[in-house]
Image (cartoon, rainbow, N blue to C red; front, side, top):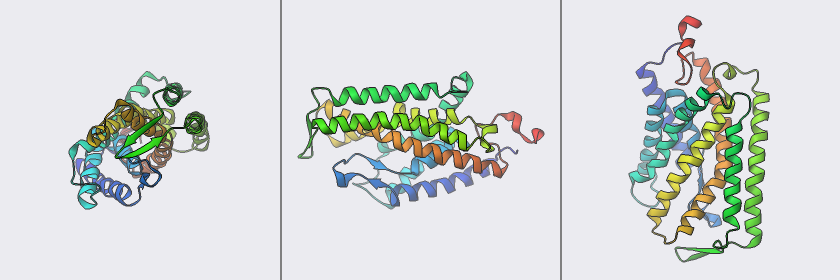
Length: 272
């Protein structure tokens, strides 16, 4: 396994920027049509996370930033480019690498995704508490009034717990399917899953929610919590999709015979 050259990283980053920009601007699914103006589902984050895992945090940040910059210049959505919106995508290219390093070092996720399970439980508990808090009755946004009736609160709470359970079950099924893949020699799938989900709930979701709240000029902390809670809920699905894509991508990348940023130095050419 060879060490990546700077030219290789730059070239590969350029490819990832192009792919992520296309996914973000032409294949994203905005939820404006169903009354949620602050949510957009896109596979571009999967590419940015892969850049962090494979090329390292610096190139992960670069891919994330350039995707947001070029995408805004090519397809403007709601005005000119504002660098403050790039904060969350840059964090998406930065934190997966460091979270993986941390949890792989302490080996807490080696056999069972303990941290992931606790995180999913805490997020679902937060969503449950928030949904049934007396202050959540309705919220106004741009003259539009969003009602939160009892059935909707029960639905959102149930969805969060169901998705939490399905995430853990899905992870075990993925590990079972991937047990004979080459990726298991170089990466820990539990740690990949934990790193991706924590990137969302600790960094991407808080940062993007705060930026959207500040730029929307909407009054009331409850509005921020609604944005935050909605993005937390969608992160269950998007993080799981990112997990599948990154497992496939990392496994395919091993065929290139270049040492990814997370693979120990002991796997350089001398060990091949």
